[in-house]
Length: 79
Image 1: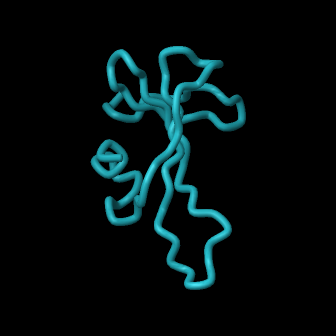
Image 2: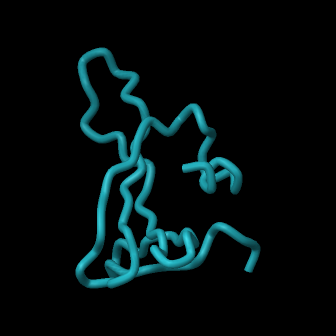
């Protein structure tokens, strides 16, 4: 989540948590869902901020292409 804040994708205080795990279709990557805080007192329908992939061997962070369900562009460095 620090990469997302450092790249100004989201402010650190927006991000509540992330969950995910290994992706069988993309070996060597972890697929993570980043969640926001729910600010609605009656509950939130969704708190999704975005999907990301982390390369296990290097720690490199990538956008997750939801349409193709695959690793997208690297976001933790200027390319």
